[in-house]
Image (cartoon, rainbow, N blue to C red; front, side):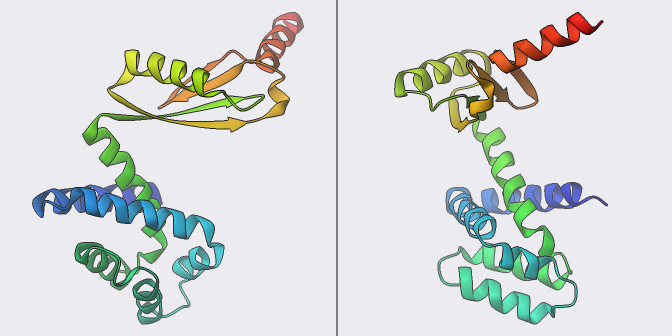
Length: 178
């Protein structure tokens, strides 16, 4: 089974558990922290995925890092994943948990790639446009790619709108080559 499917199933189970225990917000906060810590620490990611490292060592590392601060259900969830030999999917499971949480709460994540950082007014305009079409709350991330020359690329879910000059030049080049 693919890592995505495994992570998705575990994330859905954790969402259900969090709702059952009325701890959805606390566990959501913990999962955001898990993502940040694992994303910023490639050694931790390697240790969790390494099948040679003993399970009890992985469990103790996770307890050391998240132990007292994490919700008791998150700690138990980590123990479950480690004992089943699935420590390598903790990061993917945390990301899937956030996706499930966002779907549950009607939150839409969007990314806008632009040649220069967007001003506050442009970010607010972009959020208003996305809200109108997709949902009641939008989390907008702005990435900068000077190769776009001008314009932007907006990604919301599986949809993408490319108004960049580089994108238009590529379309023109394809059209002329036909």
